[in-house]
Image (cartoon, rainbow, N blue to C red; front, side, top):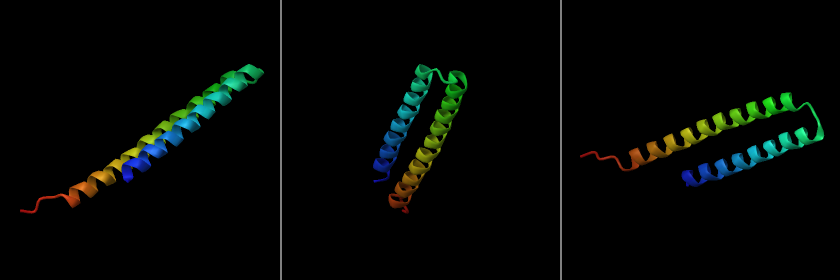
Length: 75
């Protein structure tokens, strides 16, 4: 169950990043302040990757601890 939640969360994050990239493209096409907006988008995406890595790390650590406790050999 934990694995499925992590995968679902990763998919949702990927869709969010796709939307941010679309926003950056629209800003470029509309003649907005492209350089500043692109840097801001890149920083936001980098932060999202960092957050996703932390979240997945926590989920898989919890999963590993569960299996370790559940299937540990005490003999």
